[in-house]
Image 1: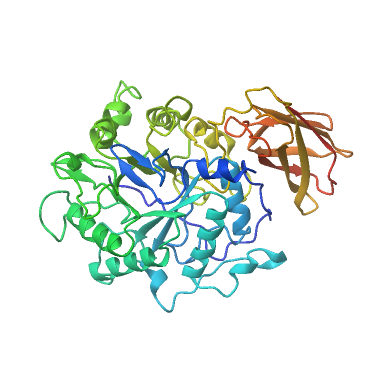
Image 2: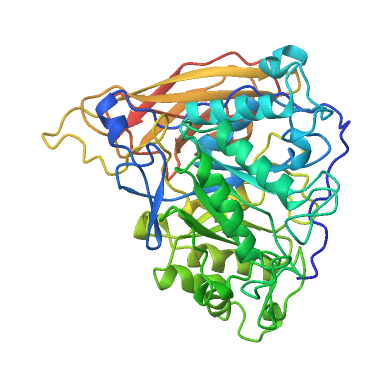
Length: 510
């Protein structure tokens, strides 16, 4: 509650920054039968606290927020610096499997024109001349092609700012619902878009269960959810909380205490996912941060506001936003505690709380992002906190960690291909694609190369590395070491100075 404005954004006419071409795809199956068996195919539904894919397999959202459509740029931020495909490739290479895309109702106005997109050097070439919704189409299409899912988030009624209620004098409820239905219709039959987050962060005077149709968010969510499902009954309906219930206040959108007494009831069963937001002190102070038992008190706080929904098997829970600058010790302890509370993927698999981190963007004023200010370099410390709760991707690019491999004990082997994706003289970006060329599934891989010049790795994602002189050794990350026969994974890195060619790369597999 009493939040600072988190959406302090860069100027629309931001200077063009470093150019990065595509970071390679995560694991890709060669066998169509494997791909069909990978969790996540088709539309999803719910069963108790789990989300299930079209085949009934449990799935988990482990994703990232990429904002901008809801601002006066009317397109995701960072396209003034990079190609949108390279952004999505990098998200996937880091192990994020879902993108939450905030938008405002301005996108549906005839006079809305996307801006601050760089088309130089071939960047974003297929976005030129498109409107905002057409750009959204391209982003959804490319994300789905790579095996990522998308949740659309009605973030604001217009680009001017967040609203406490789902409507304003300028954007009435009828417009909100009409635009939700338009999006649901637009992506009908496209299961990359798994659902819609109906409204971002309802807060006082919004209520839950009070019965006042002008303020009762639960009733509004039922009206909007049913309208969406009337045109696209396959979608999930993501419903955030409010700020205050029965006199107890919390984060905007983060209080779901009312669900126990007043659950959201839709005409189509098994479609509701409850969404909480949770933040640290870089956003605002809360009483629990100064509790002498902190951070041991936090699981009880989360249980009270939203965790009980998951623990009591009422419905799935998705922490649609959480983030921090990580500058204070309190924030560091908070994030470590929250990640543990979300339940590590290695232990619980998809029987875990889903999430999308805020944010991919570095220009979120009081959280920063996974990317640093150059829109290219990864904040490996922040990203590292999330490693234990990342989850496999989905058909079209996701790995299959459940593949037992070849029980007969075939040959473990791999090859690696090195590609320079951009070079601006003072530095460069490159990717290495590792392919399982043997006859058995791999558990891990390691690559080695030696540069002919003085190049040094400045940052690396999707792998860990050491460098001794001109020789670099890069090993798989936790989430992309397992490769089926014929499968592949890629990692990207930045280096300096520029001008380096592509050296030969050796690959060792186990």
